Length: 304
Image (tube, rainbow, N blue to C red; front, side, top):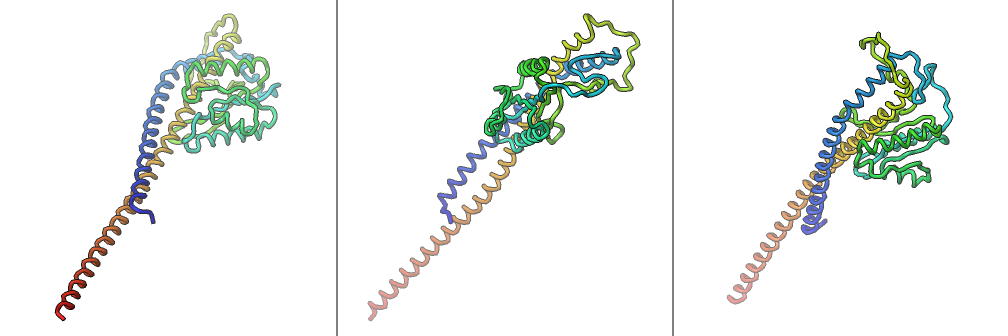
């Protein structure tokens, strides 16, 4: 059984650890609020952009564009499947990274040979490096600081590969922060389905046709990259918020475990201290009793 000094050292160690986990919880909470605020400030622009694309399809019956599947339906397009994988730079976030990598494994099972990976986050880079899986690009510093400019840089690289025909489809694997629970998901980024921009029945039909200059195809060509940038930025921020949310939960659980451990150690310390006090009192009493008996024996011997 540990002595009082060992228990006190253990208590001090747990308290120090709890200070660290509590600080990490507060930092994650602050980063989460800031990221959500930044995303809320940019969403109106991209929602408006989506609305304009929908208006184009309401106005023009037949639109052929390289960023969309043909109106007749999906076709087998030449080229590889590109996957933008968003992980974190750090751990201590519960199963956040593991869930994303499970999605990666699932997609690799569906496309074992015709795949190319573009990775955000050091955790994902190490995962692919450990398995000798080549990656096309590793976007540094993006996971911990998602910005619109970094989303544009990613978009420019992916669209360049798409236009050259090196990639026939582009998917994004990220963590969606929906409600209270986060979940890893895979979403096809390109080509778009026309149904994604279908108008609802409540929207008014455009009676007067729009005029596009120089052409509707070129107008879409200029709008789609901005829309894709917005989607990637949203996915980056969603993933970042999910990471911070997972870290908050992990640190909160660590704080609770630390408190339970402290309660047990405190009870153990009190028990050990009480045992030591009881033993000391017993030894003092036994010593006093022995001394009294010794004196009594001396008096008896003197009386003889």
